[in-house]
View 1 (cartoon, rainbow, N blue to C red):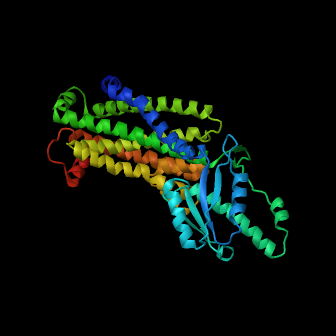
View 2 (spheres, rainbow, N blue to C red; view 1 turned 180 degrees about the vertical axis):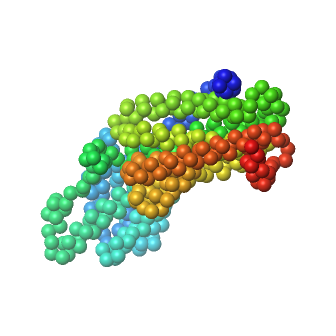
View 3 (cartoon, one colour; view 1 turned 45 degrees about the vertical axis):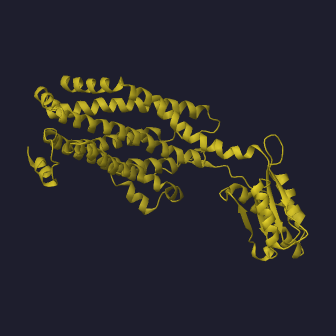
Length: 415
């Protein structure tokens, strides 16, 4: 144990005092915060001023109505209109001619874009939009929603109904969501809170696995290349060396994650609307630790069989795929967390930690699924660590040619 702790202490102290570690400790959450907040700020920046859109109205009845509705429904924080609608008109009422005028106003910056409302809009419900930037989906959706309401009213009027009266009776519904447990408890929750809980779990696990795993592989490769490993194994056994490296680098990664976790908790408390749920936090922590040690076992096996940085990077890339793959299932999983496909994926060891984290943040699985997944992880970790010990014992002394699968199998058969 003394030798294991000596190796762990050396691995931890040597890495924790480097400038790269200290800078990364503070810069990474800052960069993540920038990438999280900046897109929102940029998206809202366009709403700091009134936008002007043009309308070519072949019906000659919708332009003024749309302008009035847009002024009524959408305002900036200071109370000024968010949008103004400018009808594009001329003595020549040909639509193609008006399009030329609209394009000229677009080029001069008078308008952000212009809509073309055809004569048959009441029957077909289709309009055109032209602009240099057609990616402003929010503005287009607001315009189309207002026009849709007006069209519905016109149709009601043509059917003999009192459209203004019906409009007053119609109210937009705002849904307030509550997450209910099987025991009957409930708490207010939101889509972002549900999504980000699982998402942040995956990001933290990915960082811890990749940073610790890469340091572990790099450490083994450097010691192989410099022949330091031969001196180390003459002073302690390969099992002691491997255990010390795992403990030292794990403490390094956990120190980083704990520091970031404190920042995350502080931000979550300070935010008016929490974006991370604390439900099932202890169970999430168990999956986090088990998932970490499972991937550490894989990295030990990989690091023991490679001799160059290029081979190590390729191996790391393959492992990363399994870490980020559950993100692709995040949205479908939220819609149907109890589907058979999700249940099967949750029991595949390489996907279990991240898939179960997503499921726990959405809807808690059955107790037997949790028990089965934890058992699967423990058995997998035991098998990987046993394999890692066998491979590490011989692989750390081999340089040059990468061993074949047959050779690795032979190492596993040796006592």
